[in-house]
Length: 69
Image (cartoon, rainbow, N blue to C red; front, top):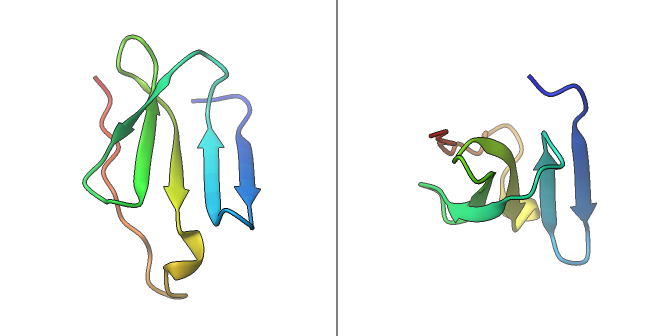
């Protein structure tokens, strides 16, 4: 489990990013078009991002699978 969680929200870009770690990583697609997972060199999930956050309705959760190697 991460000791610190970092969250960024860009209201103009309607973009949310959450990181569990500061290690280098890259973005990888998920089963949801709006969600990208950030993985490290070994394939472990170290964060995720959501594009178009405001399009999702209140009371209905966004669901996506984040898969670690």
